[in-house]
Amino acid sequence: MAGKVRQQGKATAGNGAACQRAIDVICGLIREEAALLPETGGLEETRKWGQLAFLPRNKCVGTTLRVAVASETPPRVGLYVHCQTSLVATCRDLFGDRLTYEGTRAVVFDAGKPLPVDELRHISRMALTYHIAKKRLSAKSQ
Image (cartoon, rainbow, N blue to C red; front, top):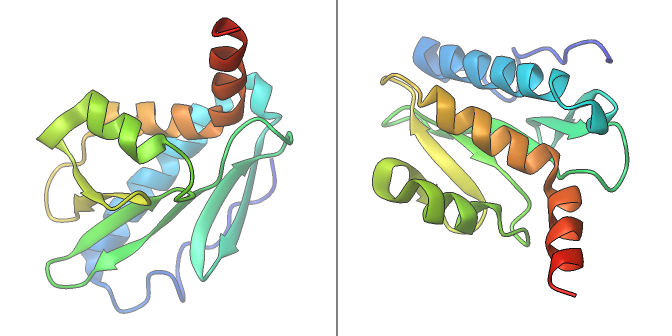
């Protein structure tokens, strides 16, 4: 696995301790889940659009997860996915109003409240194996 992308700086500067703590927890959970998924080939950590980004090293396995401050007031952190995936819709189906959504591109969390760790782990696994799962569903329907 490549070195961890610095979590300080452009993606989190000036957004307060609550947002930084939430970002640290979410990034840690993504790393933990990736380590449990050998099909990912490890985790690549980078920045996309100034946001912390995580994607499987192996191609055609999963989709990128991005983590960033969604708003400063109230302090909220978003877990962003590619808007053309079905991931946010799947989260709505699975978790309903237990989570907050931003269109088709993000699940948003209040940085001042305890994070839903089980849901974050599940979302991370779904994103990091998105293309594999999609291929399996396609093969079953044929």
